[in-house]
Image (cartoon, rainbow, N blue to C red; front, side, top):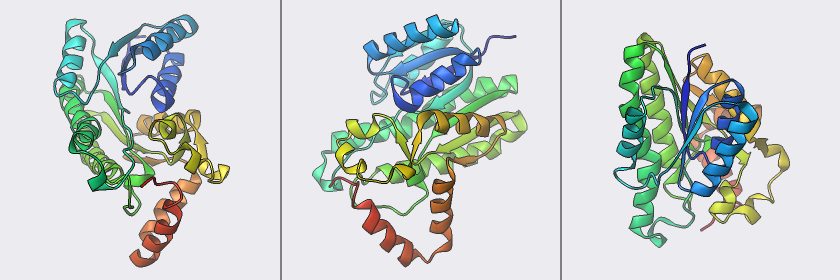
Length: 265
């Protein structure tokens, strides 16, 4: 079997880490990218020992303007053809828009918008030339539901990611490249610990939560079958459908009441 490489950003924990383990179990070679070198090294050691595959790490902060070019050049220097690109890096910024300094907003947009588009633009041509490849952009159910107060740019960024993925999906069909926007809802990861909302979201019903394993399994199945948008879990699919069917005023009223419980302002 020809060696296949998967490049995963935000790979040190949560959904990114789970993608790495699932793909390694399938025999993929892995490139792990994240800011925290210690966590990357621990995950590399685990993957290499358990799955006996090649696993490389690159500690990069994708909020830096030249990080994407460094990552691409690393692959060029090591003669690595990326067969699957998983743009997973991302985070939420709690608080109202004007209460957060611009640098924080700017860094978040660089990671969740510019980096996703630039990395896709860098690695897509080689996939197109090979007439094969996979791109998964990890978006969110928040990109499909009405905007909320607090975490002002998160839903907007994820909505962009979904639209971008869908357009690229349509363009890539003739080149036999599969592009999927993965839209999970609440997932058991450290995401809410990082943005300081763990105590708030823990009050939600456990029925609303999914494991990272379930999210990743559905995401990999979706990209294999070339599904443009994958909403994980029937509850999340129901929510996404209701936002389309119910009158806008109604769904905004319902969202306002429920979201206030876990959006930190």
